[in-house]
Image (cartoon, rainbow, N blue to C red; front, side, top):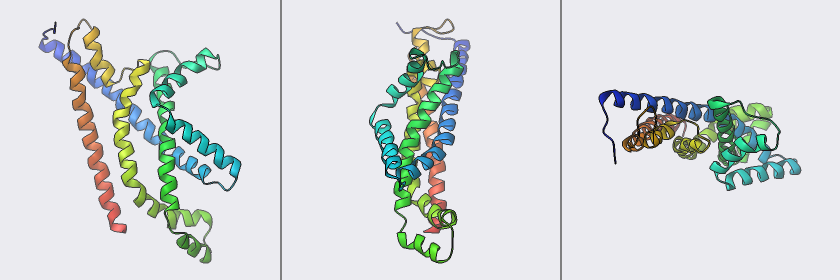
Length: 229
């Protein structure tokens, strides 16, 4: 039977959901900050002229992209301790560290393919023109390739970033107390409150607002980049 709740209970539930959303937001930001530069590095490895490195990187990307993120989180959190390689810190700190590492690696592999497509989409003639002008490889990348690559990758990157907003909910598989975990906890019993279903469904509002804000920001970025077309 669904329980009724008082205004004090509502404030308690809302505070718990806000606390969970802060962890969701933290995971989202750490993933982007870590995955974008790592994805660029991985894309360079997948385009390397050294075949063993190129095929090794592409094999890793294939494995990461071809297996569920939820399994990667579970494996990264539990396997090191089972094999006695190392132990994550106890409590929420260790869970957050493990899930952040899993998300960064997973999304870096996805981003790397987007970066690779963007870089290879720049006409070779433009890079050759830079070489004729005496520019170094670094200068050619910064002044010729980078801006054109960004214009090409923003739409697919936007899709992945929106997906990341929702994928953060997978962190609850190792009991990280993100927003959905907190919403579900009031069904089972949390802070003396149990039998409430609405806090779980109310978490959809957090995701809708979060996705909306991210979508607006990415849309503005795309409009600014249209100036260079």
